[in-house]
Image (tube, rainbow, N blue to C red; front, side):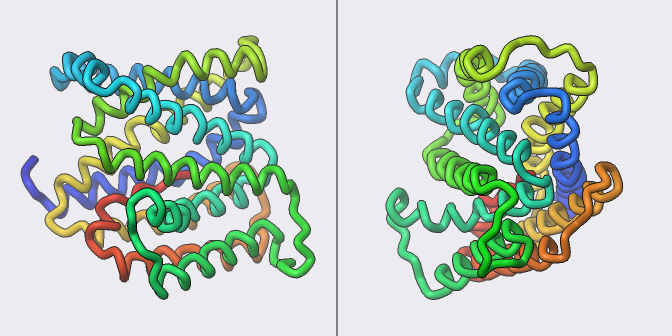
Amino acid sequence: MLKNQKRAYQYGLCAVALWSTVATAFKLSLRYFEPVQLLLVAALTSTLALGSLVIKQGKLPLLRQYLKERPRYYLALGTLNPFLYYLLLFKAYDLLPAQQAQTINYTWAISLSLLAVPFLGQKLRRRDGVAILLGYFGALVIATKGDVLGLQFDSPLGVGLALLSTLIWASYWILNTRNQGDPIVSLLLGFLLSLPLILVATWWLADFQMTAWQGWAGAIYVGLFEMGFGFVLWLMAMRSATDTAPLSNLIFISPFASLILLNLLLGEEIHPATPIGLALIVIALLVQQLKYGKRYRNQITPDA
């Protein structure tokens, strides 16, 4: 792909615009579907969309090749994402106000720096410590609505699941560092291998009685734009960029834009502590970028 910074910004802004809407889509869909039902429809939608893209690119034979070469590796990827990650994340959204679940989820990059110590052999430095303290303190401010001393949570389980989902997502990206295959084909293969797990989980945790069209509409939207094309657009942005540094900073628009949409479309009142906590998390991520530089910015991928 030819390098073109203007085109990279266009792709990046489109991805950020899509990601800014998904917290609202999650919450609307969960009014009609159980978390695992939302995951099932969204994952199926994303699998079909990614499959169509892979077929169009003429890369379908790579699926069989990758599966034959590393079956357990791709099963592990699919188990982490989409199965465990989105199952935990959707349940957190079900239990918490969307503004809390979404902003806590942005601490996944902090989790990544912690997990990189045992799994990638990296060392924590002073700057890492500052970022970790700022990021998790920001999450605490959001979860307690500013009452950090009282430690009163809307849902302790929801906060715990949101934080656990960041560990799952960080684990996925650490495991993904060992992936030399085509990223879209690899993502599709992970989704395909996760579908049996999601079907069993739907049978066990809920049922297949999904009749509300609103739930279907929301889940299909999530599958297309959160799990599927958002990732593709961001990948295209990174591959088109002549300088990824300013491009990667676009992701910090997403959580603030998402709060505005939550207020306008869901009528969710934004607590004063939420933007304060979110600002602390964003500062923590920027502190990390000072250390990791270009390598970190190339890897970072936002989420709802």
